[in-house]
Length: 393
Image (tube, rainbow, N blue to C red; front, side):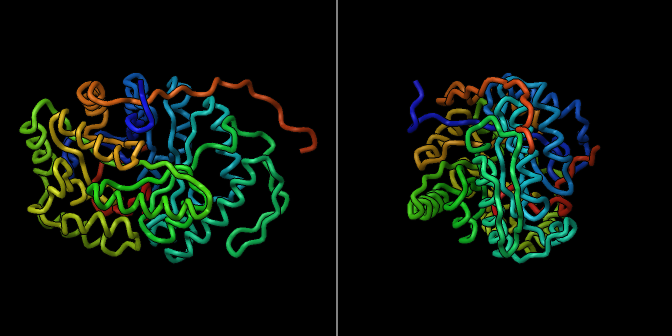
């Protein structure tokens, strides 16, 4: 029987920016055709993953549209979809969320993304420095929480102003879909302490993750709240250690030093604390990629955001997952290249060795009336999507 101290919640990733077999190469690339993304979603639903992260950003298909399309094609799968404060209003996003929560039968999760790329944010009409984005997020989520609680909201903040805001069609989940957030800065920790249900970190070595968890727990406790924890990793799991590490080497075998240097220069210009921590793990060097037993930073040579992978035999990768679980990490958001085949490999090799938490979903509701009176871009691992918009900042 699963216990809170042992069980994990496995998630997968919908490759909404494309997919492929090599980092930094278009050879064998798979475009973002919906038929392929649907294959991935339906596979992980059947394999027993609890949910999927759908990325956000200018190089991705829209996460809300994809989640809406995938929901009726799956049975139990949950969808972690981004809300970006400042890009949309709190009420507009809350209406979208409540509707998708209802349509999916309570399978929506919200990923709050403050953003780490000034150029991408500027293209979306947001011109704020790092900490100001989190100040905006604090106001945004204050209004969001009140809307999801069924209140009619007047709010006059520095960044957010609403009058008479109200949800007429409530979400299925009481209090609204759970809120996730990833961020390594002090400002992100404070927003987490005030509003967030589950804190996400990119895959740093266990001592660094333990320190982040302790800081978030302390900040949340000071507000009388508790927070759950998740982590974002790629995964390369095989029958043997030798086969897994050979696959890791193959994945970056098409990379040249000029491409790595170009991407690392772009990443260095972002104002994301989380990205800086990811880049510091390897420093752009091929000889510094193993940063902890079975933790490999090779993906981060040419990918912004989640740049580490769990690499090894099923037994050793499972042992590493249990090590993170002992720290308090419950949700493991995993991915692999290509995503369809690696989802099968991960579930078939790894799941039998882990205690997987059951994930029942709410019954699908009937649609009730409101209250009276009331294509894809090809797979790319380069600076074009180095902003890492799906993760911590």
